[in-house]
Length: 158
Image 1 (cartoon, rainbow, N blue to C red):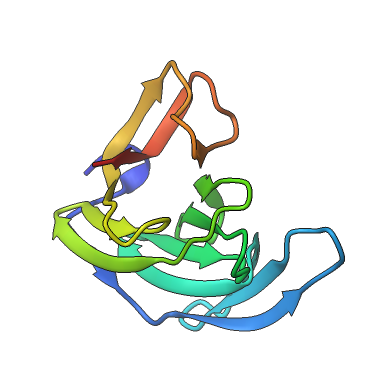
Image 2 (image 1 turned 90 degrees about the vertical axis):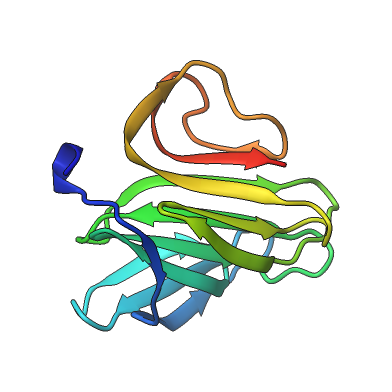
């Protein structure tokens, strides 16, 4: 058991979330509305395409892209059981194509995937308890806030 009652044994693929609506406006990031079929709760998040979804203990890990073939962004959302945003991170670069591929579980609390290039490998870990990080992530990883805050998600390019 860790802080906030979270038990992280493994990350498991799920099909709990369904797309209800997508809101798009010119020059704005699209917003996807998702419904949790178990709790019947909705959540709205930046992005357009629900690429993958996982249960991590009693939390959820969602991978969402913008669905843009010429300048793609990958958003990784970590939500609690009430669908409140615990943490988010973004992989994006100006004018860079991207496609979420080769998503595989690598052990308890972690997974690997590629996004910008088929041969690259990113490792994402869900930490058993949040850790403080002083420095921001290296480009093209983006977070808000970027400096000295608790993080549940750790990402590293291999």
